[in-house]
Image (cartoon, rainbow, N blue to C red; front, top):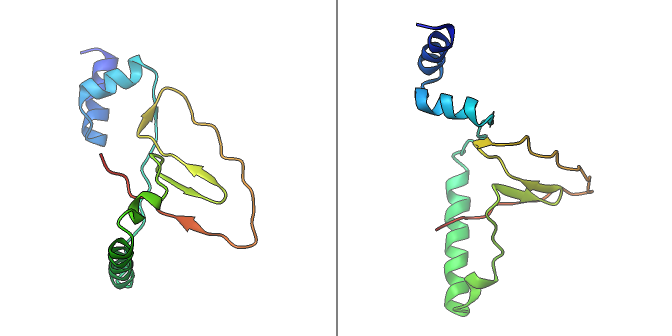
Length: 113
């Protein structure tokens, strides 16, 4: 067994990734990125339910209301820029130019197929 094969087995076991995936990552010179998730808090459920009820009321008032909601295929966006976190990419993403505002606001978008 070559050093490369031993290293691949070690990486496969350590990171629980298929050997074929590791070979593809090396062959295509991809860069790894980690997903970042936000912890849901107990106080989030009532706020989400209120939001859903509000959206339902708005849809009852205006059937086309949902079409007025902006959406994107990006992971998220704020007033400070777009945040797109890929799992793997063939180049390192460019850094977001930071802009500071007096009040920070976030916008969560719902993506669907």
